[in-house]
Image 1: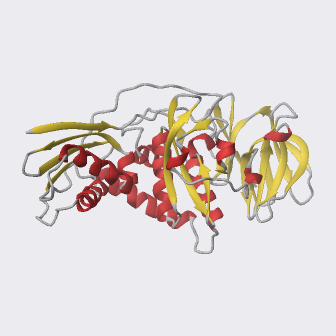
Image 2 (image 1 turned 30 degrees about the vertical axis):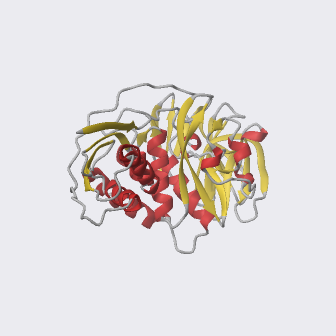
Image 3 (image 1 turned 60 degrees about the vertical axis):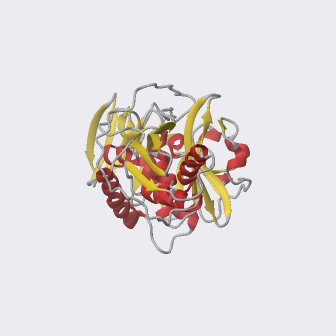
Length: 384
């Protein structure tokens, strides 16, 4: 009996930002897989197209042992059986992104067995699907534009997760990101892929490099018929800032992304549209209706607002504002033009007032309280 080792999935464990790049090399965790189902295919599996489709079908169901009886031409089958699996991976993008390794055995009469290891299992994937159903029901509305859907998904992922490997599940999985709030770039991109696709958007899972030679994964997404890059990992600030999003890698062009990313461009659609370039330099964003209040990194972190309908940016004030949040007519932020003090801005009167005369970080609103940190220690202030 012949045996061929096909491939092992690349471990994507890279840092989300250039400034905080890490090259973490760890071993994949032991998998506690569950058998899905094994199909002895009928004699109708007689072409490589049928073989490819059957493999893809079972990959999508996270089957750990794929058994197929092939009755077609046996000419050069060792090479063709491997090619069929590789083509099936292109059809089963989400599942293939979770591949840890694959081996294949085949005999001279066409009995083939692919043994597949994943970074996840069927129980976890059932939970992932339920979680995504629940999240999308909350953040996606039928009236939304495609741009608004992409932004909602980017914001959910970035605001609820952090880059890291300290997870019980594999940090390469969407499961770890969605249930433990932590993963590496692979988990970010696979989660985004599944959420974007389920929201009705055409998307790609892209594998390439950052910082020269560090393996990395991100997405491409089609918005109103034009392709863009979306890197949710690099939109997530590091060190982690609860509730904070940036948009430097949100719906960007090939030219923009090539400044610090590389990939085999011929394998993916071209991204040339600059329609959403107004999302650049937007950090610590807080949205009220169709207005985004943000720290403008192109103007020394000063407080700006962005009209999401027109793309117009307007300076609100000269203060350097970080960790922006809000409720009602008031914005709260750390005023880096005034020692990082916790400051309130009334949007109707544009009057400001210091709330806490201490340097604060990680400001957020929770259950009627203004929550923030002073020297890393969490504090709470009841809102009137």
